[in-house]
Length: 354
Image 1: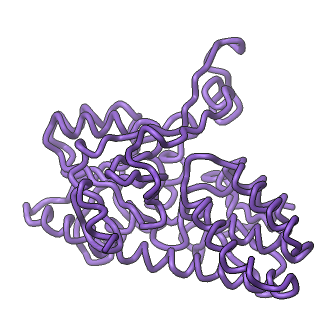
Image 2: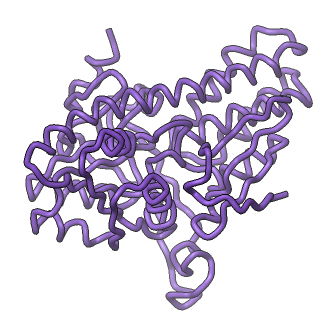
């Protein structure tokens, strides 16, 4: 059951997912309740983990993968047979189709536990989930350090660096500093003046609900804008750089991210604004030649018809298309910020494949 806490964001020793030492549960921040309530939910079974991912209590490509890994470990504590392992893998894999980190984390755990006797599988899966979470935090930091150099160069103009972001690619989406937010946090901590334009991110408002909550907690200056205001700001020369995250990146550098990213990339290209995606290597899908093969999740019509599931903004019977993601072609990107460095999208393979 949800557990309420009276902690404020600034008081929180923050992690959106915490593995409990008894290895019988994890604790998550219910991201559907932010920013109004900071609610912790205990996940004690694979069914709980699958429901949390599907309902977006847990969200963000890296964190989805981590939660799924722990969900697999919880399943193996109950039944570690080959049949149960296959069923658990399939159940978790089906929760959300677009973020490749989900499949990557589950397959990584599978490779570890399959050769083991059933009695050893649950503990091994839990250790692997721990490793995935630890490595994710390290990837975030490396991305942040590389992206920090971009902000440092822009800061030489002698005024606050104006950064536009879309959706939430922050600490709430990962086990660390976030991907797109990591350079921002490191710059702020280094005393570099930054200001973030936060795109609201319809229809689930992850920018408005989550990114502003994070930035406020960390004392980073920011301003919330409606989604389509980003293009106008770029035309007015009020944006120095666009930083976004990614849910899946094809081998050619095409980036799949929250719906609305493509439109911002087009506006950035038209106005000469640098546009970068922060991409940890587990988000790269080397099996896809380009972004046309990325499955795009279609979510429920109620997200569009009602604000936060409440007030109706259109007649109930209105037909709705609700794609959760879009694909930004590599040609529109200035570069990809990875843990191994910054590269042009067409040089991604050179960076990671010997």
